Image (cartoon, rainbow, N blue to C red; front, top):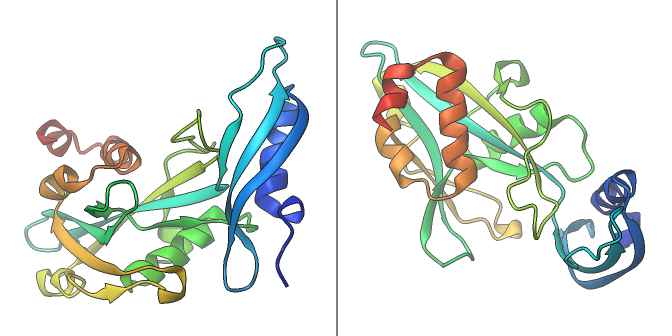
Length: 223
């Protein structure tokens, strides 16, 4: 049975945030909603008539997506200590090009971002990462596109020390859920080279936040 938009977790999370920040909501129109195979709301395009605490109308269109996670997976060669990124390669609707991204996914109605992050890493790359191995870089979510979307991102990283052979075994593997139209290949690449392949600002930011967190200033200077 299809979930009603107004009953969904992500809709009420977004609406309650608007109200808590003082917006007076007059009307919300559902223009389009996509659901998963279980009938749950994945995302929705909304028209919102609302007034700010300052008495102004707020721009009305919102792409409702909810909370998401993104995970930087860094392989470290046990012999050379060279760092590699484990990226996912797929085409995206922004321009149809092949993109290189960190593993990511939606929380939907779940509240444990780290658990979701670990699951997304496995689904998109095939590598098992424990929740305890994930390091958070932001305690409060970041909003990638505040003018058009409610998307709220939690970012993590993990470091895995492996042999060169083990690292390369994760390259060019087919992953993803076909039911969600995911056609993914894994892509293992030296960190500096991989950073240059990433074109989404969230991924670029996560690279910098990871290097800052671990204090790898030499690599940071090369980016």
